[in-house]
Image (cartoon, rainbow, N blue to C red; front, side, top):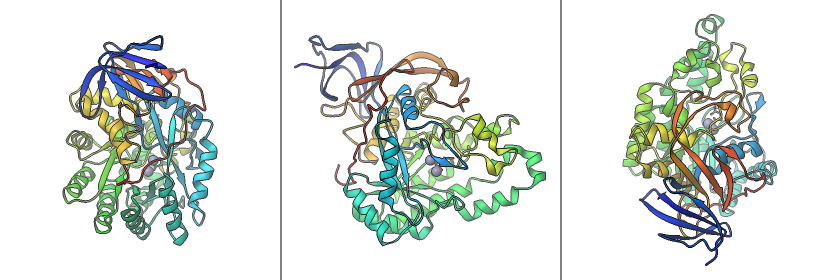
Length: 464
Ligand code: URP
Ligand code: ZN
Ligand code: ZN
């Protein structure tokens, strides 16, 4: 048998188990996984002493997103290069429908922005902001054509993105029939907007600065919405995925709903696992961390890690939406004007490994499950992505568990001139990232070609 690439002697880590073996790659696919493979002149990568994991699948990014009066500054070209540097080989971004307009057109427009520029594979969730007979039909057509997931925002009234409960209910009803999944940004729009308004006084802003972003968004503004969405999922039988879950009470609600047989999954993000809302107290840098939902408290971190470990929080994604310090400075002391979002694709895999696996909060196999296998399964990419098996795409992260790195945005691919994790000491870092058989990053530096990545069609639930 001839190969394009042979990865020799690494410890292959899957969600189910780990073992030492060689991997043979041919024509972008894994064609052999065996104790001993003869290279026969193929390019050989020595992985002795290293972990060989399926490339991570980040199911939540917003590259070049027009939002909060600016556009997130890691675009499809640079954001996917950054992902490769961070061990991520598949990204899912969003095609958000303009209210009153076609959902399919949103997909076509977004693909025009990404195709030919991406360095790793990507796919798109639809973003449903409106509901009528045409939306329903378009949703079904998109599921049939390989796009089986749709996000609904329970907030963002001012942006025109909010899907009200009637839309959410009908979207969920539809997924019960068509095999799709509804992702929700779960926060309580009306209470949240009222609380933001109540805190939006000159006196309060002078006193609390960016910390008001936290004071105006108590945990109940998230967990009430999670409970409501879970209720609609239960009564409709639809499939529900809670994105960027930040509060421990929300995780408890997901746990109960799972026990109750609701088809519900949940994602959390490194910012909620590794940071606390103390970051908002810094007068000079607090506003940089403005993101929705906002970063919460220590006990929320504890609950989210517990959920990841025990299986009631299913995935880690980044919610990457990069705004640099100039963009963040648009806030001018007013917490309601902070562009919401932060960079994340380059740091997710190593930071969750350091804080999770090294600190014994996650086993190595569970780590692979939450950053790669579960998002691939939930969003219809498995076993093409999310595993290392004969027939899967050769999307691989060769990971050095002993490499020590101090996070510094200056050494990273992102266009961002700050990092939420700046100065964090990591042990374990991606050594080589392989996307469909091509080496695209080495030791945190991009070595691939823009345009190598492809749009990937996915399978609806029940068709995996
Ligand atoms: O603050 C965030 N998360 N920005 C991106 C948009 C969203 O809500 O996911
Ligand atoms: Zn969101
Ligand atoms: Zn998001």
